[in-house]
Length: 79
Image 1 (cartoon, rainbow, N blue to C red):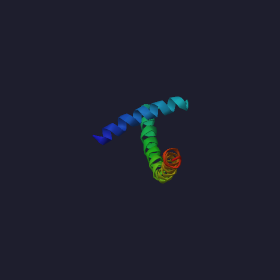
Image 2 (cartoon, helix red, strand yellow; image 1 turned 45 degrees about the vertical axis):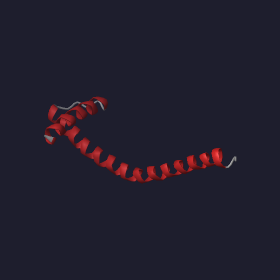
Image 3 (cartoon, rainbow, N blue to C red; image 1 turned 90 degrees about the horizontal axis):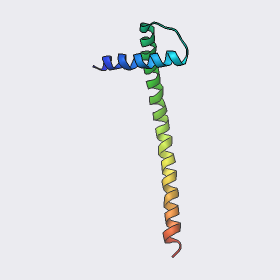
Image 4 (spheres, helix red, strand yellow; image 1 turned 30 degrees about the vertical axis):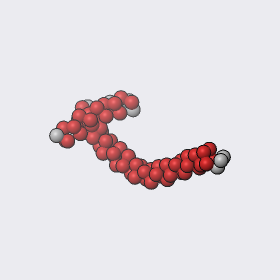
C-alpha cells in the first residue's frame, strides 16, 4: 500500500514540479522525477528537522525563560 501511495504522490509531485520548471517529460519520467524528488526532499526535511529540533528546543527554552522573568517582574517584584 505504501508503494501505491508513493507512486500517486510521486506522480502528483512530478507533475507539479515539471510544470513549475517548464520541463516536457513523458508520464514515466514525470513519476520518476516525483518519486526521487520525494525521497530526496524527505531526507533533507528529516535532516533539517533533526538539526532545527535542537535549535527549536533551545529557542523555546529562551522564550520560556523570558516569559518567566516577565511574570516575576510583573507579579512578584512589584510587591
